[in-house]
Length: 216
Image (cartoon, rainbow, N blue to C red):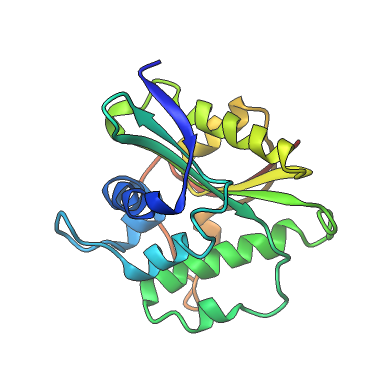
């Protein structure tokens, strides 16, 4: 391999955010369809950056693929999943970016509905939050290797299951290849605002947001 995988440390935080700005922030289907990131090479969404840093990046659960030249070519950011609250969390109600608040509310909606029967109550759940690969390195197995390493770390640290919510068709396809089980699916066309219009209309092939789990 012309890259290696390593655990993210606190010293990598800025490099990780720079990588996410270049790839994940712009490529993620929900961000794209609502124009979350303004035009411009260095533009970003501060609320999204804060959300990505909500779990300390240096929590020893996050990993990155680094090329032989030292460039980050892929990241998988993980955290321990906390129980879903009955009421909308404060970080959503206080979000001042109306576009990003729509995304946060969708993720909260999925969290509530995928665990209505409290199937995962009492379990230690690894939340695979972000999977992103440099566009020039896609199709080379980087994402697969990163997720497999994340699952290994999860097992070693005593997590019972891994969970991920995929807004992208491609990340969902990767999870199925790695043996994840689909446990909840919401078609974007069925998630509507108060006027009955779909809140999100991503470009094909992204038609649904899907939650997957895998026993560790």
